[in-house]
Length: 180
Image (cartoon, rainbow, N blue to C red):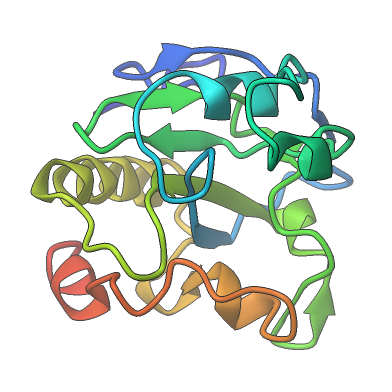
């Protein structure tokens, strides 16, 4: 995998989100792993894409009424089949972490890249997702050398009072062993 001059991952389908902003600095030194499924626990379809691009129809599922006004995004989404969608160029700030702190530094969106895995805390992730995540991580670490193994975290690590993802179903040992 390769990142091009427009800060997009060559292998990703582009679906640009308006839910992003300019970074205050060029520092990108943290990778945050998340999970998402819409509706919760259901996979497939294009609800995540619609959510991240503010096109979700609240009539499609009762849960959507609770999230319809949220303005969020991530840099990448890795679906169950390993396909990758990019919502925000890496040089821009995606709105994925919310209120967060890493090593006494607040607002992790400012210096991080967010990757969403289609899944839940409880459901094991697919081999194809790990393969895509590992390849994307290696490309990101090559392009942004300040992202080191000890600066790859879960959403739960930077927002422990609010978040639990990527959850206990995420195999950190396997994932980290493959990005040496």
